[in-house]
Length: 160
Length: 292
Image (cartoon, rainbow over all chains, first blue to last red; front, side):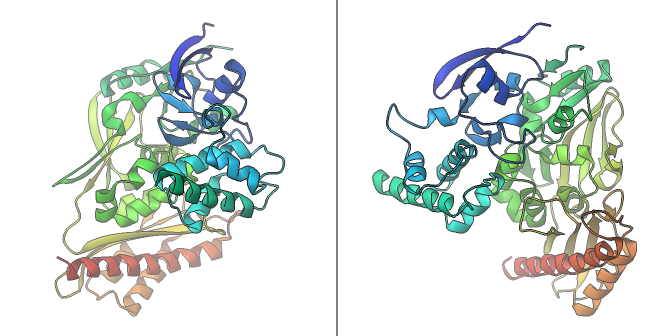
């Protein structure tokens, strides 16, 4: 069967790939484009490990078909740093040791970026509710929440 | 394996043609149910008909008559709509309770209705707001009240070639408000053990002139409860009338026993949630009366 040719924008760059009609964006990113930062956890939309931004909206990449990306804009974890400069969220996750095994981390950081895009100064409660769809079996979440809140206050400071 | 097609109709009529031409085609909105069912082998569609490039299925319009909600509009977009939240706070609550932030970015009210889970959070809130399903098909358009849309778990009135294009909700009368509550064993990210929605209209003196009550997850489909409505109408929505409405809701519930709750527990909770939802709707309606 013939594959579909999809033209899209990924991490600010034009991108194209071939995919099966029923393939997911998660599979296209990881297997087609070699962007393996986005992780597959449950593959049923329950764990948040595959979080990406689709036209700026936080979605699970496992529940988006690859051909849906035609003409859209995708941001993955690979798009957050600027060259060697880490995004403040990435830097704060390191400083707070907000990860252990690391499988959930890209999803948390992309989800936290979506939170800070919408709400630059979230409360702890807002942060915990927003990230409730990202599961972490190592950290117990406290360090993750502290890292996000710290990144928010640093980004606010640098924006002033 | 037969090739699965992916289609992106740009109009409702094109979507209807695609659905009518292929009985195995499935409508793809947010995919939060369909793609999981596909992945687990529960459904093997011959085509995914992605309706999200049809502008009227992805829009929210509010005018003097009320709300027209495009069936595939993501929950997150609905939750961010200030006017919708102001006019139908209970409906907005029911939408915002669904899943995670990520699921909210994909899942839609139309999809929630078409998946036809008895525990779907939006159904009760839509029923008490007199919502109608706008259905397009090979023979044109028809409307069905939301309370008649699902006929059994996982089954709706949709016929081959038909699709749900919008949900219409009439604008609430003065001093009218709604509320939806569900019980889950944690703070979020779960499926309702039981749910209840209420909408009440008060007169200038604070008497309830109209009431609608619906309960979810306690029968094969969400149920409207006329006996609970009758207990509220004519009252000041005092404790005694709320208690009668709760008893009526418990009596109307016909829940199953499963891992989420026993029959007796669900029956009790349906009543408790009905009482509380009616009290919240009443407080909201009174608040409107004090700020005309």
